[in-house]
Length: 218
Image 1 (tube, rainbow, N blue to C red):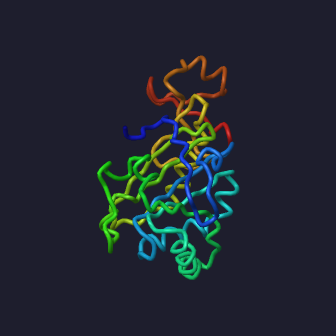
Image 2: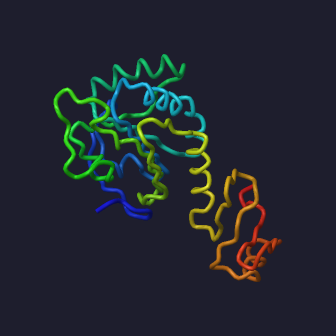
Image 3: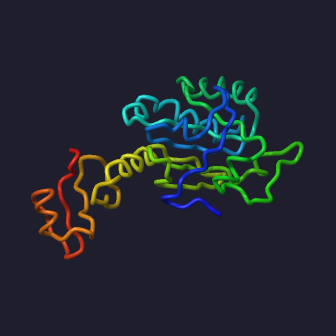
């Protein structure tokens, strides 16, 4: 079964360049982001992991842990981090899962069940392993993104999406297109306008079903 929004992520034990741990233990009481990559020592992936490294302060500010995934072994990951740090001019502080047997990739439905790693494999053999999962403290999937091999991820959007997930988690609001923190948010349809006014104060009724308020967290 494919993982869906609000599914609990499988609590598998993974080996990383920073030791082995169960996914639920790694997440703990934090939000977490899992970034998967086709293979070590590939150009797009190196720039992407470099972007993750450069955003260390942003992840920390949001209390969010980050976990990389690639199909090579621990020793390769450690060597690759030297390249990542050279390109990014930043510490590659996050662990990278050595998913050599595709256990995590299959558990998260990043690859077909029959996928395998042939000898002398190339990035094309794991072309579908380029995904982003935002996971809540309750270990449930909040958001998923999947990119093709040729398209590097926009980490400003990953941060924006994380902010939106955190802003709306357990609160009867939603975020409009292109929202960033501090901008107005949308009242959930589960609330009447009267209930929204009681809870949030001023409500701007744009349409009967489109009502906005100031960002409660601003």
